[in-house]
Image (cartoon, rainbow, N blue to C red; front, side, top):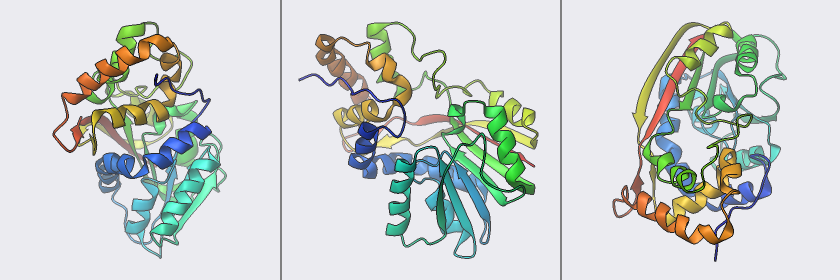
Length: 279
């Protein structure tokens, strides 16, 4: 049996949605430290109106909603209505009535000027088609003095990526990512996200590279299955793998990932960029 991933054009593709549902509990557990780190960095307070961009299946929007309370609100915006439907279900299951979902494009936000007290995005800013334009739109809808806070992936050369996609790339060669496609490492170079924030008109810009816990609560083969299902930017790389090579590559990935296995979880750690600016 080979494990070649199915094709899909974007994050809303049905295969990716099925994977998001299948692995939702473990994916949430892996991402919780990053969510909490961004929320703590953003410093939400009760009563705030928050806009979360590229919110996907609902984080950090749901966690933010617990912080701003019933007198506040969080709007979760994403291009994919299918992903937002999952976010709505998650918010409903938590009994949260202050989460609103909005299908839309970050480059043309459907909100009036000066509408929000805080803007956030967790691992989304790297994928904006024109980040300066999208961040300029975010600045437009923020109130004077409001902050915009982001987490973006750091370098590719770290355990989570190298132990899986690095193995595939080493075996098949060619470009790691299409030059005109989505790039998770767009802001990995220190200072690059800060510069984009300044170009978009933000002031009081700050940026740090930080390492967060990033652990999969299960065995190596599981996290590799999940990665292949949801790692949209790497699909061209995965589809270059000949069917007969998959058993060999799967075995090599399992060996690499097992280096970080601690019996009940795989502790990769995550090097990320944390940045903010103020309107």
